[in-house]
Length: 390
Image (cartoon, rainbow, N blue to C red; front, side, top):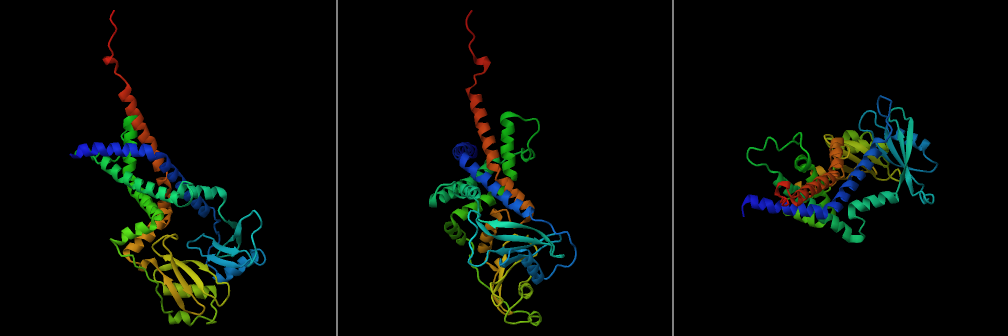
């Protein structure tokens, strides 16, 4: 079988598989875009901090938040600003043993404070997912098919999307002498040729993002099988590490049996190289263990995070640093992050959001090409019609 004969059969399979699987794939793509847009909006809706100057110590931010929190609601997490104009996001939880008000599904509050002036900027309730959001995520993850089967169906559709991307690249591949015109939609086209160019050119330029999102989706649906396959090629080792506290940092600790949030942060920051603190989780008691979260300097705030466990004194119990994982494990960690539109800033998030619209575009253009070609085959040219005898 020659290449062009194989290409003809590949095009036929590509077409009918797309017509058959198009609707559920479009649903998965659109719901994924909506989820990314929701998370992005939540991040953008946080108030900005107008004051300029040195950031207050974490202990001062905690004390300021306690003034604005409902009585008895403890501070649990402090999200640190990572750039100028960003507010400190302080999470407070329900008092121990207290249930949320009936019908409100309340988990706690996020208080926004100016990290320089400690001015209260606003608050937001933290709730469990609403029924609408639960249905949206269930539609994306399992097409709302109950139990195990829905996830498996979506995983298999993810495999199909990967194959669509690869076969689409093969079908796009230009003939000799046609490379220059293969990367843009030619002006003045309409009908079948316009749909063909939109389908092919958009598929080429979006292929890398599309494949990353689809492959990572297959990993989420079939984690054991996928990681086993990766493990045949790359090592999947990961280890917890520890560190010795810098003597100069240890000397600044006032009470060696109970750290303050700022002391725990200093211990973490000096124990993990080339990283910045983004969040501090406070222990329920002063003599408890802090979890300080950092991200690499060169990565965005949503990159694979580094978790350090500090306390109760100036000691590092464990460090979970994805940078120390084996290549295979690092790849898997990054795939998970990239699937959610995180890790590489707003440009990547926007690309992932748009990638969810691609199945709709491919579905419309693919169906249009099939329909127009079918209509053309069923139309008998006027010249071929036998004229009646006079």
